[in-house]
Length: 233
Image (tube, rainbow, N blue to C red; front, side, top):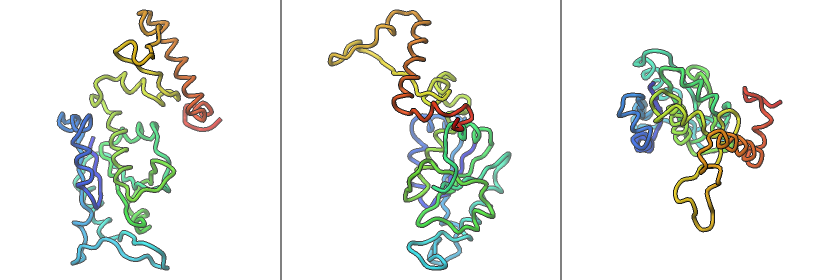
Protein backbone atom coordinates (compact mmCIF):
# COMPACT_ATOMS: atom_id res chain seq x y z
CA UNK A 1 0.00 0.00 0.00
CA UNK A 2 1.16 3.51 -0.76
CA UNK A 3 0.61 6.57 1.44
CA UNK A 4 1.01 10.03 -0.07
CA UNK A 5 1.04 12.92 2.40
CA UNK A 6 0.51 16.36 0.84
CA UNK A 7 1.92 19.01 3.15
CA UNK A 8 3.70 22.34 3.42
CA UNK A 9 6.15 20.77 5.89
CA UNK A 10 7.44 17.43 4.52
CA UNK A 11 10.57 17.56 6.68
CA UNK A 12 8.32 17.45 9.75
CA UNK A 13 7.03 13.98 8.82
CA UNK A 14 9.88 12.15 7.15
CA UNK A 15 11.67 11.24 10.41
CA UNK A 16 8.42 9.77 11.73
CA UNK A 17 8.02 7.48 8.74
CA UNK A 18 11.67 6.42 8.81
CA UNK A 19 11.51 5.11 12.38
CA UNK A 20 10.22 2.08 14.29
CA UNK A 21 7.66 -0.31 12.79
CA UNK A 22 6.68 2.04 9.96
CA UNK A 23 10.31 2.49 8.95
CA UNK A 24 10.90 -1.27 8.96
CA UNK A 25 7.74 -1.83 6.89
CA UNK A 26 9.01 0.68 4.32
CA UNK A 27 12.42 -0.99 4.19
CA UNK A 28 10.77 -4.38 3.74
CA UNK A 29 8.67 -3.10 0.86
CA UNK A 30 5.39 -3.76 2.65
CA UNK A 31 4.31 -0.11 2.36
CA UNK A 32 5.63 3.07 0.79
CA UNK A 33 5.24 6.61 2.11
CA UNK A 34 5.92 9.85 0.28
CA UNK A 35 5.69 13.42 1.56
CA UNK A 36 4.97 15.88 -1.24
CA UNK A 37 5.52 19.60 -0.75
CA UNK A 38 2.41 21.51 -1.84
CA UNK A 39 4.46 24.70 -2.07
CA UNK A 40 6.38 23.31 -5.04
CA UNK A 41 3.19 23.54 -7.11
CA UNK A 42 2.49 27.23 -6.59
CA UNK A 43 2.76 29.56 -9.56
CA UNK A 44 3.30 32.59 -7.34
CA UNK A 45 6.77 34.06 -7.74
CA UNK A 46 7.04 34.45 -3.96
CA UNK A 47 6.01 30.80 -3.46
CA UNK A 48 2.85 31.79 -1.61
CA UNK A 49 0.17 29.15 -1.24
CA UNK A 50 -2.32 31.12 0.86
CA UNK A 51 -4.33 34.33 0.78
CA UNK A 52 -6.81 36.31 2.87
CA UNK A 53 -10.36 34.92 3.00
CA UNK A 54 -13.22 36.54 1.10
CA UNK A 55 -15.67 38.17 3.49
CA UNK A 56 -12.97 39.07 5.98
CA UNK A 57 -11.81 37.25 9.07
CA UNK A 58 -8.61 36.22 10.77
CA UNK A 59 -5.84 34.14 9.31
CA UNK A 60 -5.03 32.89 5.84
CA UNK A 61 -6.60 30.22 3.63
CA UNK A 62 -4.73 27.81 1.36
CA UNK A 63 -5.47 28.54 -2.30
CA UNK A 64 -7.04 26.25 -4.90
CA UNK A 65 -4.35 26.27 -7.58
CA UNK A 66 -1.33 24.79 -5.77
CA UNK A 67 -3.37 22.26 -3.79
CA UNK A 68 -5.49 21.12 -6.75
CA UNK A 69 -2.45 20.83 -9.00
CA UNK A 70 -0.62 18.85 -6.34
CA UNK A 71 -3.47 16.38 -5.83
CA UNK A 72 -4.02 15.86 -9.54
CA UNK A 73 -0.33 15.37 -10.29
CA UNK A 74 0.04 12.81 -7.52
CA UNK A 75 -3.11 10.96 -8.58
CA UNK A 76 -1.88 10.77 -12.17
CA UNK A 77 1.18 8.80 -11.01
CA UNK A 78 -0.68 6.24 -8.90
CA UNK A 79 -2.05 2.87 -9.94
CA UNK A 80 -4.98 1.06 -8.39
CA UNK A 81 -7.63 2.38 -6.03
CA UNK A 82 -7.11 5.85 -4.54
CA UNK A 83 -8.86 7.71 -1.73
CA UNK A 84 -8.17 11.39 -1.09
CA UNK A 85 -8.65 12.37 2.55
CA UNK A 86 -8.47 15.88 3.95
CA UNK A 87 -7.42 16.00 7.61
CA UNK A 88 -10.01 18.30 9.17
CA UNK A 89 -11.75 18.74 12.55
CA UNK A 90 -14.99 18.83 10.56
CA UNK A 91 -14.58 15.28 9.24
CA UNK A 92 -15.88 11.96 10.52
CA UNK A 93 -14.03 10.64 13.53
CA UNK A 94 -11.13 8.30 12.86
CA UNK A 95 -11.26 4.92 14.61
CA UNK A 96 -10.27 1.29 14.12
CA UNK A 97 -13.14 0.64 11.73
CA UNK A 98 -12.05 3.49 9.48
CA UNK A 99 -8.46 2.20 9.60
CA UNK A 100 -9.68 -1.21 8.41
CA UNK A 101 -11.66 0.48 5.63
CA UNK A 102 -8.66 2.47 4.43
CA UNK A 103 -6.41 -0.60 4.48
CA UNK A 104 -8.42 -1.99 1.56
CA UNK A 105 -7.20 0.78 -0.78
CA UNK A 106 -4.05 0.60 -2.89
CA UNK A 107 -3.28 4.28 -2.28
CA UNK A 108 -4.24 6.77 0.40
CA UNK A 109 -3.65 10.48 -0.22
CA UNK A 110 -3.70 12.54 2.98
CA UNK A 111 -4.07 16.27 2.50
CA UNK A 112 -2.75 18.40 5.36
CA UNK A 113 -4.28 21.82 5.73
CA UNK A 114 -2.68 24.70 7.58
CA UNK A 115 -3.44 28.27 8.62
CA UNK A 116 -7.25 28.68 8.71
CA UNK A 117 -7.84 25.74 6.37
CA UNK A 118 -8.25 25.32 2.63
CA UNK A 119 -10.47 26.84 -0.04
CA UNK A 120 -13.79 24.94 0.00
CA UNK A 121 -13.58 24.33 -3.74
CA UNK A 122 -10.63 22.00 -3.17
CA UNK A 123 -12.90 19.77 -1.12
CA UNK A 124 -15.68 19.94 -3.70
CA UNK A 125 -13.39 19.11 -6.62
CA UNK A 126 -10.81 16.64 -5.34
CA UNK A 127 -11.45 15.41 -1.79
CA UNK A 128 -13.31 12.14 -1.20
CA UNK A 129 -13.66 12.58 2.52
CA UNK A 130 -12.79 14.81 5.48
CA UNK A 131 -11.37 13.03 8.52
CA UNK A 132 -10.80 14.09 12.13
CA UNK A 133 -8.59 12.36 14.69
CA UNK A 134 -10.38 13.97 17.63
CA UNK A 135 -12.54 16.77 18.89
CA UNK A 136 -9.78 19.33 19.10
CA UNK A 137 -7.98 21.69 16.73
CA UNK A 138 -4.31 21.47 15.78
CA UNK A 139 -2.09 23.89 13.88
CA UNK A 140 -2.01 21.62 10.85
CA UNK A 141 -2.90 18.20 9.47
CA UNK A 142 0.58 16.69 9.66
CA UNK A 143 0.28 14.99 13.04
CA UNK A 144 -3.20 13.60 12.25
CA UNK A 145 -1.86 12.29 8.93
CA UNK A 146 0.96 10.49 10.74
CA UNK A 147 -1.60 8.89 13.05
CA UNK A 148 -3.60 7.62 10.08
CA UNK A 149 -0.52 6.19 8.34
CA UNK A 150 0.48 4.38 11.53
CA UNK A 151 -2.98 3.01 12.32
CA UNK A 152 -3.68 1.85 8.76
CA UNK A 153 -0.21 0.36 8.21
CA UNK A 154 -0.48 -1.97 11.18
CA UNK A 155 -3.59 -3.44 9.54
CA UNK A 156 -1.57 -4.66 6.58
CA UNK A 157 -0.20 -8.17 6.42
CA UNK A 158 3.39 -8.48 7.57
CA UNK A 159 3.73 -5.01 9.11
CA UNK A 160 3.32 -6.32 12.67
CA UNK A 161 5.33 -9.36 13.85
CA UNK A 162 2.19 -11.52 14.16
CA UNK A 163 -1.53 -11.20 13.47
CA UNK A 164 -2.27 -11.65 17.16
CA UNK A 165 -0.59 -8.32 17.89
CA UNK A 166 -3.45 -6.41 16.32
CA UNK A 167 -6.25 -8.82 17.19
CA UNK A 168 -5.69 -8.50 20.92
CA UNK A 169 -5.01 -4.78 21.11
CA UNK A 170 -7.17 -2.28 22.98
CA UNK A 171 -10.44 -1.43 21.23
CA UNK A 172 -10.43 -4.63 19.17
CA UNK A 173 -13.73 -6.34 19.80
CA UNK A 174 -15.04 -3.23 21.55
CA UNK A 175 -12.99 -3.68 24.73
CA UNK A 176 -9.75 -2.30 26.11
CA UNK A 177 -6.76 -4.58 26.37
CA UNK A 178 -6.10 -6.51 29.57
CA UNK A 179 -3.10 -5.58 31.83
CA UNK A 180 0.33 -6.79 30.73
CA UNK A 181 3.31 -7.77 32.91
CA UNK A 182 6.91 -8.86 32.44
CA UNK A 183 9.94 -9.59 34.65
CA UNK A 184 10.57 -9.13 37.53
CA UNK A 185 7.69 -10.89 39.31
CA UNK A 186 7.80 -8.30 42.10
CA UNK A 187 8.67 -4.62 41.80
CA UNK A 188 8.43 -2.12 44.66
CA UNK A 189 5.91 -4.28 46.44
CA UNK A 190 3.71 -4.89 43.42
CA UNK A 191 3.48 -8.49 42.20
CA UNK A 192 2.41 -10.11 38.96
CA UNK A 193 -1.06 -11.72 39.40
CA UNK A 194 -0.69 -15.38 40.33
CA UNK A 195 -3.06 -16.51 37.58
CA UNK A 196 -0.45 -15.51 34.99
CA UNK A 197 2.17 -17.73 36.62
CA UNK A 198 0.35 -21.05 36.93
CA UNK A 199 0.49 -22.08 33.27
CA UNK A 200 -3.26 -22.74 33.07
CA UNK A 201 -4.12 -21.10 29.75
CA UNK A 202 -7.88 -21.49 30.19
CA UNK A 203 -7.75 -19.62 33.51
CA UNK A 204 -5.44 -16.99 32.02
CA UNK A 205 -7.83 -16.40 29.12
CA UNK A 206 -10.80 -16.13 31.48
CA UNK A 207 -8.87 -13.65 33.68
CA UNK A 208 -7.86 -11.55 30.67
CA UNK A 209 -11.44 -11.31 29.37
CA UNK A 210 -12.67 -10.26 32.81
CA UNK A 211 -9.91 -7.67 33.11
CA UNK A 212 -10.69 -6.28 29.66
CA UNK A 213 -14.33 -5.82 30.59
CA UNK A 214 -13.52 -4.24 33.97
CA UNK A 215 -10.99 -1.85 32.41
CA UNK A 216 -13.44 -0.80 29.73
CA UNK A 217 -16.19 -0.26 32.29
CA UNK A 218 -13.87 1.89 34.40
CA UNK A 219 -11.92 3.82 31.75
CA UNK A 220 -14.10 3.90 28.64
CA UNK A 221 -17.68 2.94 29.63
CA UNK A 222 -19.07 4.53 26.46
CA UNK A 223 -17.57 1.67 24.46
CA UNK A 224 -19.89 -0.79 26.18
CA UNK A 225 -22.88 1.15 24.90
CA UNK A 226 -22.00 0.62 21.25
CA UNK A 227 -22.77 -2.28 18.98
CA UNK A 228 -20.17 -3.89 16.72
CA UNK A 229 -20.65 -1.21 14.05
CA UNK A 230 -19.69 1.51 16.50
CA UNK A 231 -23.25 2.83 16.85
CA UNK A 232 -24.72 3.64 20.24
CA UNK A 233 -27.43 1.27 21.37
